[in-house]
Length: 351
Image (cartoon, rainbow, N blue to C red):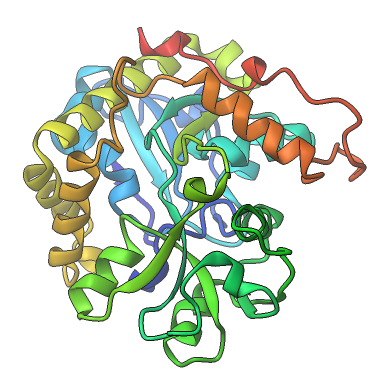
């Protein structure tokens, strides 16, 4: 695996910005003559776009490389670091063959005209939470957030999650929003905002390790449907042209995530070894996060093959987005009819 040199990153925000922040690099597809082989035992080169700096959401991909699963599958995987263009946009444009994209990103992006297909689900349930400082005695439930200041991330999805959770607790779901992106966590700690959203397997773990855990509210405890939060996407154009490479990639990734589920500490060490510059100083966070993801069943859903889609989650969360008016078409107009969500994902390449 070749990793293009990424920027330094803030550990506190390494996962939540999926889809809101993406990549600057680009690469040819595996079908380009100059892009294939590359002197690596005639392996097919494919590109994979990160949504942020390496973190435990990507653990199975790095494990698959470190343990030789990609090589076994005849692939040489080049990782594209994040930048100013989202991974889903790069995949849709054919600038990356695969990329990070969760369920809601696919539902909102494809509806808006992007060429996206979910081909693997990395987390089987929603890891997101509303968080406030634990010492805020005036905020003990989501309804208390009405009229407060929300540190947002510049994406309609996050506003939808905050409003849905507050309304589900009997509030109005009305608040002042300021777009802070990765600065939201610092602003929260300094009291400049009242609440933000976090990833429970990353930011909340870091807060625990730092000795000041957040008070958190799980969206699903207040009526927001669950979703398969993290995932991997490709485009219909790439899948139609390269079905064998797609199957090889997805099955190697599945092996990587299965290993991470069964051996979280070993997988965490492999992730750190693959990314010493960005994760070498965050060993405790990476290990604690990897253990939590395994223990709490984030990587493997009971009754489903690892990485498989859960149609009920896609239907329920899709209805939440549609009914809330958060879906628009390629012209930016609100959808008049809810899509057929079964067209947005496939398990074909899991084997």
